[in-house]
Image (cartoon, rainbow, N blue to C red; front, top):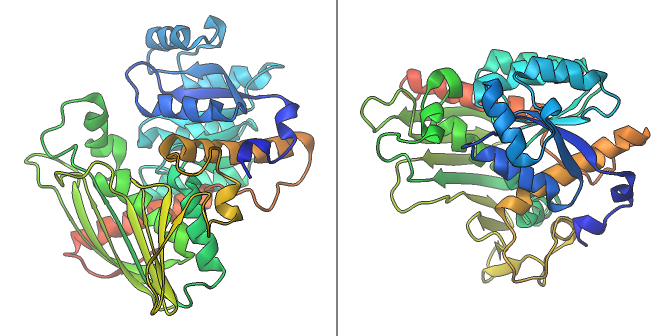
Length: 387
């Protein structure tokens, strides 16, 4: 059932991991490091943890990384680690969005697997170039859309794919937060509200998560959208609230709302899917629960590990039913699926068919969605096709 016992690949030794970004005062780097170790699949051995050599060395000391494996920049790191006999096998990229493409390119061309935070890039041209870099490399590329690792998101995906909901008619997603209601005061807010570093604002930071999870759970592909994006905070140069109408391929409709100025909302990611035979509702803040309503019947609560929960949820669960399993474990599931794929490559074997993780193509789809939202909003919410 649990992912920690699903194969013998754990005996093959930990994967040597490097990290770019994620030094002192960084939020997401710490999350990635925790996730990489939950199932004991990776060992952090090198890094360019900051944009300055001094901060990178200090961060390496904090993390127990040897001083001679702490680098002042990612190019130096990629070149040296590729030459070392015990060099890194994979690198985690946890920098602001505009750096994802140039960093990934340096490691991919040296055959080092890449695990990258979302969104894929800050611009659509960079996203397309990154796809080409991945296709030209023998290395794997994994994008950490961590919510796809939640057991009940996997359960929902399996139920939709099996036809339990019938033909899909409606796919709704929302992701409101409130932490940017006032002027940005901290480091995390500053780069996220800088269009030169982040690209888009709310839609790129959290809206793309809602979009990705809606696609992942429903199996739908988006055809066109109409986006109304706005910044409510005076002087803010990126969007902090977005309403998007969705037209899915095959005729389904939907809406997506993302906001970082909605007081009372902490991390309220939700996805609702409705078809001819029934509906599903998933709320990230209640990660163990999935509501299923067959048409004409009472609403049913499916819990992780409980009655009605299937193999898709079970293989990425670690702890008994009733114990919350969510954010960090979802990240860890993406890392552990990445480890399965990397160790298959290491041994020259095939990647198992049940190994699921977001790829560079999911990332391109997300950046295409962001770009379409920006184009639509500039044209007063005109309908635009994804290109």
